[in-house]
Amino acid sequence: MDRREFIKKAATAVAGTSLLLTACKDKNTSAAPAESNPEDMTKRTNPNTGDVVSLLGYGMMRLPKRELEEGAPFELDEERICELVDYAIAHGVNYFDTAPVYCQGHSERATGKALARHPRGSYFVATKLSNFSPSAWARKESMAMFERSLEYLQTDYVDYLLLHSVGGTSAGKDAMQTFNGRYMDNGILDWLVEQKAKGRIRNLGFSYHGDIRIFDMLLRWHDEGRYHWDFVQIQLNYLDWNHAKVQKSRNTNASYLYAELEKRGIPVIVMEPLLGGRLAKQPAHILREMKRMDIDATPAEWAFRYAGTPEKILTVLSGMTYMEHLEENCRTFSPLRPVTPEEESMLMRLADAICDLKAVPCTGCNYCMPCPYGIDIPAVFGYYNNSIAEDLLPEGDGDDSAFRKARRRWLIGYDKKVERMRQADHCIGCKQCMSHCPQRINIPERMHDINSLVEQLKQRI
Image 1 (cartoon, rainbow, N blue to C red):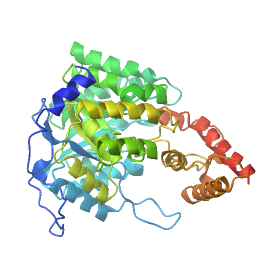
Image 2: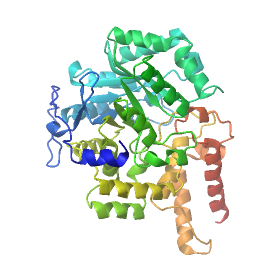
Image 3: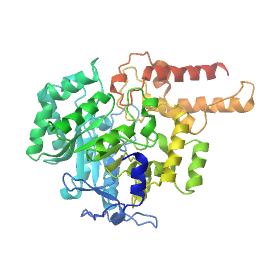
Image 4: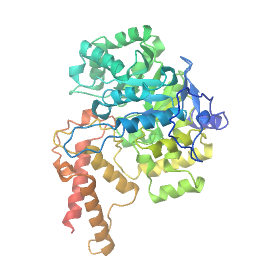
């Protein structure tokens, strides 16, 4: 079934079944007129286990952190995290996705503390085997990582366990060598299958970024019965549906990934429906087209509706740092309105236009951090991409007063958003960051381009 066919089918289908969670609602939560009803949250059923999962999943990668003095150790705001988790559960969200590497290694602990305050049967928790570093490839180290995940999450089983970001490279090795080093040579994949048989893992799957050979190989193993994948997590949004290969030379269009999983009946978890927030901010001409179709819908709502429409999607992950984002997303999915064929055509046209903007395909995942030379890579790319989305890049002649004002405003904004010692000009091209980037961005090259832009603007003052 191609994209247009399943959109036609989904547009007329019932959005999903309802499940009222048993977790208690925070007594201090006030009901607003536009607040979503937990019974209205769209649910999808996992055919492997019968799990009834909220179509909106909570990605625990961008959690709120405490405002600390400069130089103080990183610290998550656990009180705010508990408030967010409480609201999510009270409004129908029951899937929470974390990993050992999220939030500089603090996410699993914070997630475990917040979820442990609710009945274990009221939520599903997903985590990953994030043994990226060759030092963690040793069998004992990988096993210890899984055991720590259970400890930090305060549970004796994981509902969804993923091989984290397969298809990537590490330590100068290609994708196949990296995959074999992480999971096969040490016997860890077979060990995880054993843990599933013991009930310590309920669903075993993988998340994919990068080399398509790995994705195809794992699905071939599934077909042959060598390994059974209960679910797979892929990057899917209306830009990556057809343009992932255009933006990132080593990533794969979501249209191919979804089709391969759909024909095998493998449930799909969606990551990066907003591309790290990039699709939530659109230039004026893109926004006008969206408003012509639906005057009230936000760019984020369009992206979430698109990502949630395919029927094999089990849940759509969103990293929600702020309560207002969580509230808006709960409303979008309570219930989800599948995109119509006409709306899908509009989004495909807009994807073509967005691709032409030449923004950096950074999702702000922070896998590239820390930079050994102190560069704040996500902040640099974020400021540049926001400038494109909001049409703020200075253009014109140095003698034009409007250009001079725009140039000054842009350069001052750059210094405010990114500390001077952490800006693009400090990149020496060591390429240490590149093997960690799921989007396969040539980070040093793009840093050089952005620094060249900055220098050109400065020289025209």
